[in-house]
Image (tube, rainbow, N blue to C red; front, side, top):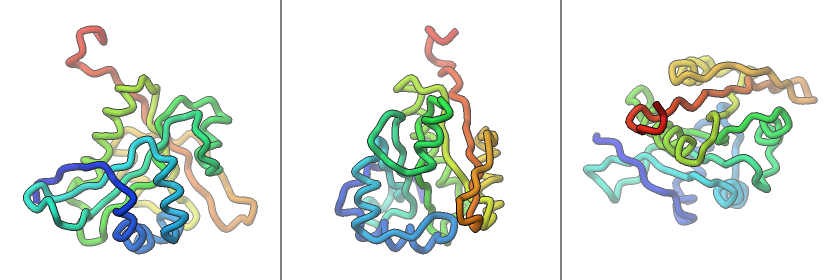
Length: 177
């Protein structure tokens, strides 16, 4: 497989919903209407595909939002309330059988490029700590994310680590020197 990314469109919800829901509890379950609403709020909505098989069903997705939008997710709003100027990753999901093939890194390369292009100071996201998601925490740590805080839901049954990765200047940009 040669991974490539492409933009998501509403018709992609047909495969996005089952992919998302197969990843529960790492991400919340969603029906097509709810995930469609998240997709409408996304400033960056991308899929990872096999470049050799362009019509194949994508094997991963990522949805991200710029700060200052109308998205009302409590985790998105937490970063705004704490003055973190970051491109927020609402969800990244890679199909079970495709994990460990650097597809998440391919998706995040687009996120970091977009954050740099739009002048963001960081890329932000949250990862479950209750229930625990050690694989995702390790993955994000390898990408340079650091924990800013831990937020526990009022029910006490769910908690997330709020993560941020700084945007480094593009070394090929002469103005960054």
